[in-house]
Each structure stands twice: as structure tokens, then as C-alpha cells.
Length: 407
Image 1 (cartoon, helix red, strand yellow):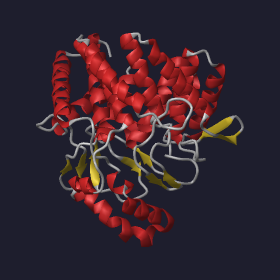
Image 2: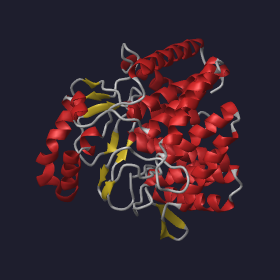
Image 3: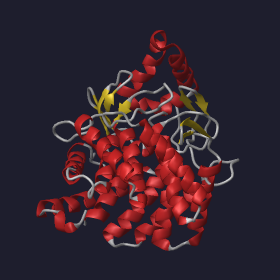
Image 4: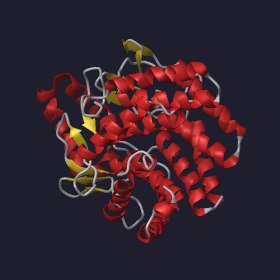
């Protein structure tokens, strides 16, 4: 967004956002770079067992998962009894990108060193036992198709590592970051499986070991391989990107939405996963200028505006849920909505208004006195336990990018 498009009141808001970002950095310095996590209860041995039972038996297993759901909603701080604080690669990637953006916003190269420190953490947290750089979760993750072990590469995390090192290279010119980026691209190309679901339409796996058809996973891989393929002159990577892009376009519903997955499981439509798909499509379109991609973006953002924002411009967590939820608002939705609106400035005339409503709403209702952000607005009360992965780091990066883009 160019400065000429902003009113004076919006320019004052940028200074407020910058102040909020600086307060958050001060909190981060005090709090540290490890945290509890949204999945702490479910990553414990008891939580994984209960969740697996629920996936198999649904209704009659509901009483088994109910205690974890209630603790999560009404006593979120108790998760420290289930798990220690940990470091999360996806959060480190967002913090790195946030500090590189803050260096631009403040015209202060001192922030670059903070970003580099998070890149150093990413170098050490890469998944062991795989060729090429990749990242996943530091905990066992129970899914509807089984347990994903800690340290398993996830295609929804890997592109953020790529982008973080890309931002580091842009800020420093360090050629070693380019080597890591190429290694990330090589992993994403060679280590995930694909299945043809329609002529010319290929769905990639979520990890090297599954055969799921998750839409946002394919959007992430399509973006990563397109970006890396162009940078490193790998036509085979770009061809693979187009196959997964075809799957994302094929998966779009008539109303413009995307189900989470197209394999008969996890058939919900929520806010931030919709944003994930759209932002990856936008990045691909910026590289390729393909009309079909732009058409999908416009239909998808039209659905987002109609079904995932309320009349006041606040995010709605679900357009189509598949189970009971005990919260009204989600921090992640604000972070990804801001990212999306920044990308959409030249595509959708409503994006600047949506952007400012999201930023204003975040500043008014989500910033705590110590500088960190509320995690969720519940049906009753709020969850103020900070999770770096969900979504303190994403919100920091979104607001830092806002400052760097708007100012």
C-alpha cells in the first residue's frame, strides 16, 4: 500500500502499530523464545490416545476428549502440566521475517541481527535424517490418519523457512542463505509423494509418509516450488508446482471456498486456512500473471468477505464447522487476514478497508498490557496464554510488515 493512498488518520495509526510492535519486542525479550502451544494437551500421551479414539468412534468417544476440550477452553494455563515450553521452527521463521521487516520499517539495521539469530535457530532445528532442509513440529501430532512423529517434515511449515532465509538474504546478501533456500526447494520437490486425482491434476502429500489431499498443503508446495524454480532455474520444480496448483484450482467449490481436504476427511471451511490458500495463490499469480489463478483468487476472496468476516469486519472462525467450538475469535485469523489484505491491495478494492478494520480491531481488543496478544476470545472470557506458534509470531510479522509496507 503506497503512502499516497492513506489518510492522515491512517498514518497516525501506522505510528500506533509501530509502537505496538516495539512493545511486543520488549515482551519477547522478557518472555523468551520458547512457549506453550495450542496442541500441548493433544500432544501428550493421554491426549493423543483420546484424540485417536475420537477419530475412530466420534460420538461415544466424546466424553473421553471432553476434559481436554474443557481445560483448553476454561483453564488454558493448565497445559503447562501436560507439556514443557518448547521452541517452534515455524515461529522462528515468522520472527525472523518480522525482524527483517521491522528493519525496513524503522530504517534500523540493528533489527537485522535479531532476524539472523532466528535464522541460526532454524538451521539447528531442521529435521534430522532427511536430505535437504525441512522443518516440522517438535511434538507428536495425532491426526485423522494416524500419528505424525515429532521432527517429521511438514509442507505447511517448510515454505516459511524458505521465505525466512530469502528475507535474510535480501537483508544481508549472505550467499549461504541462498544455498539453504535451494536445499529447501530440493527437499520439497524430491521428498513428497504425488497422486493424480484428475487428468493433469496432482495432489501432494502433507509429509513424506502420508497420502492426504490437503488443499493448503498443495498451495504451499505450489508456491514454494514456483518461487524456488524461478530463482534457481529449475524447470522441473516449476512443472511440479503447476501440477499442485492445478489441484488447488480443481478443489475450489462453486461458491469460491475450499474444504480443508479433498480426501473425505476434515471437510471444514475455516478462516485462516482459507487465507493460507489465497495468499499462496496470490504469490503464485504475482510470479506468473496467470488469469485462471487471478479468477480463483477473486472468487475465493469474495467468499472470504461474505462468509468469514462479520458486518463489523471482524473475522469469523468457521464458515463450515465439523465439530463444536468454544471460542468466538481467533488471533491467527487476524494475522493471516492482515497478510492477505496487504497482498490484495492491487487486486480487490475492498482490501484496504478490510486491512484497516483488522488492524484497528487487533489494536483495540487483542493487545495486553505487557505487550503480547490475546490468543483467543472464548465464549466466556479470553485465553491470554501466549503461544509463539499460534499465533504470536505470525501477528508480530504481520504488523511489522504492515509498518514496512504502509509507511
